[in-house]
Each structure stands twice: as structure tokens, then as C-alpha cells.
Image (cartoon, rainbow, N blue to C red; front, side, top):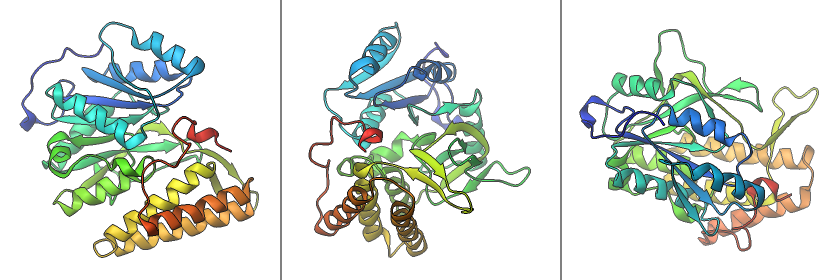
Length: 312
């Protein structure tokens, strides 16, 4: 199951021995085992943190994680993506790793993901630098970035948590992901906080992962109308956490904040013109904005045990 674990010199950069894969699961599907095996082929240590999966998903996961050498942390309730990531990062640190790469359960990685991330790190080494991976968005049917020939990595403002390579020393020095966010925008906030402490954020030019967000539909005649259909609960977290992040970083990152407000406006327009359940989703947006302004954080009452992609 991957390379043998052992000590490693962090100065030579991330490798299979000093880097841990952290995977957060929440009602994983039947294809998760195959995706997990691709990670195990590259990382000596892989830890799965499960957020209270139930039913057939839990049964599959229990059987899968009972195999010798596999590590998992099972939360009795849905602790949220941020806490689950922090649990996985704490495991990686306890195992003596210097880096961790975080993944969503539905991300399908390439066979050379870790090697390419390591090469990108060597092109821009830094103890506080974060590296994300370029990916094919299966719903929007496009790559996240398009680099020029010969480019290894591009500077970015933020990258998504899936495929994010983090130096654990940075995590310990600035704190982990914000657990009061619960889900959504934890990646944006962490990347912006890392840069405020002297770090940089990069993304590989090569695509190393297939990934997707929500359930997407396209509308004939609308060139840019690829709408990610999340339920009301996710709409709430998107609005609340984006606004809280904007309030905390607007002085340092005014252009980024303006783009986030534009995204929120587009999301609201998408609900009005294209999505079902308009009244519930718009009410969730309004509640998220109100809670952000009042400072009410943490999980939304009654949502810890519901799969967030099934709350329509």
C-alpha cells in the first residue's frame, strides 16, 4: 500500500515518505475505493476522516477501512469540512510528516500528482508556500487554469482544498482551517491568511485531478450559464462565509473581495432565473448574509447529519 513509511529530510521537499494524504468523506459512493487506491499508490500515509456517514455508505466505508494498514477517523456527527481537515492534519503531524495533501472524496487524481506537486515546490520552494493542482472540472467541462508551454506553476490568490499541499509547519504557526466556517470558503480563508503571514499560493499548470462542484446544468443561448445547483443549506454557508472572509480581508485584498461579491451576485441571479427551489435558496442567502453581519458562525442548526448535496 504505497511506499514504506519512514523519516525524511524536509529540506529535500515533499515526497511519499514525508507527505500524508488527508481525505474527508461524507456519504462516499461505490467508486471511492478505486480513488483511494490511487492515493495509496503515491503516499506512504493516507488518513480518511469520515463525517458521520450512514447507511450503505457507512457499511462500504467500514469494510474498506478494515484492511490492514489503513487509517481512519470516524466522527459520530458531521463535524464539518474544516474540523475534519484539521483532524487529518493533526494525524499527519503526529506521524512525523512535514506536508499534507488534502482531498475531497470524489476527486480522481492522476498517477503522478505527488511527483508533480514536489516538482512545483522545487520550482518555488518556501516554508510557507501552498500548492494546489490544476484540474478538469467535470461539470463545467474545462480546466481550472491554462498555463503557457514550459510553465510549471502559476501564482494564485487561492486554491481549493482538494489537491492542496500544505506545509504542516505553516498550519501549526497560523492555525488550521477555521472550524466555525463548518463548510465552504475554508480554502479561501486559509490561503489569504497564509499570504498575510508571508506565504505564497501556487497552482500547477498541468492538470492532475478530475473534480466537480454540485450538480451543473447549462442553458441554451447563455454562454456562461453553467449553474452549480447546491441546496439551500450550502447557499447559506456560501453567502455567510464569503462575506465574513471579505470583511476580514478587504483592506489587504480589495480586488479579490470585489470578485467574490460579483460571484455572489451571479449566484443569486442563477437562483432567480435558472434553479428550482428559488424561495428556499434565496431565504438561505439572506440568512447567511444576516448571520455574517451579526457574527453568528458555526454549523447551521439541524444540518450536521444531512448530506449537504441532498438538502433540496
